[in-house]
Length: 363
Image 1 (cartoon, one colour):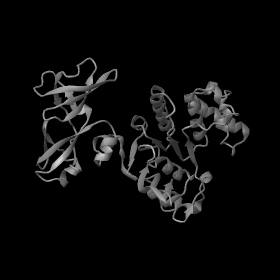
Image 2 (cartoon, one colour):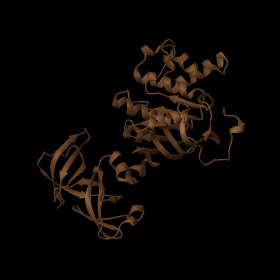
Image 3 (cartoon, one colour):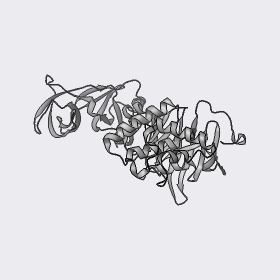
Image 4 (tube, helix red, strand yellow):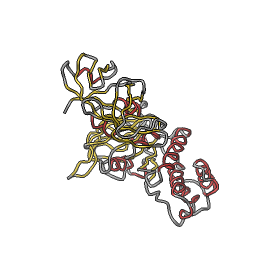
């Protein structure tokens, strides 16, 4: 536990905060001026492409890497500030790695017990058993790591991180080595476990599906910056710039023209820009813009007079993602139930169902 002399002014609303943090090396700054926070029991996710600096940021929070500047606070205690830092072993942070990092010569129970060195042996064993049960491995306590599946090994690693009851759990690409179906299942189960135990967690991933399945808040990292920190709904529906919109979810951009203070004209008709979309105020009538169109904005409708031609299709079981050519030559994506099976080259009727019209400058 961090000693009382490290306590600064109360930050009760923000249980965990990163303020103006820069990470990297003297010759190369990976991320600069990073700011975000989490309340107690919230789950955050740093989402970005490989090599963007998200894992380095996570390791700086854990104390494994030095930050170049900025401050980190956890439960009203500072973990680092200019010129001073709390050692990793005193931060009361749990870490779950991509490669599990289990001790191959220890059983599942002994791997979990390893971090409970402050307890008596009977209490440590009891606590390790409790957390193995919490992750669904009560019957695997004597199993050696090589006898466990990849998912079971990751559960042991998770139990080991949670057993000391840390104030924050960090997860570095925790499910990336698992197959897709099990990855999605385990991410949902881990979220439920964190919520049930009121655990505050921060995860790193390049997989947006993991981010949406796990996180309350998502930080999108690109171009050496944390470009947006927001709840998952707003990151998807109200991205702050074209880079975030392009990285999160699927979609295309249509050319549009601002024709009124709250309206934009596109090849698919005139669309209303809602009052809650802040960027609308930066445009003037006559401006050419880019309008974000998600696949779920385009609805298949046989009765519609608006027609589009199928130029590509991607079957996903329950639905198709169609690439459609619209009048004027632009293309959009449409999410269509798979019982509507249309061939490439076929014309289909479409209509718009857009709750959030998102527009960006035409650059």
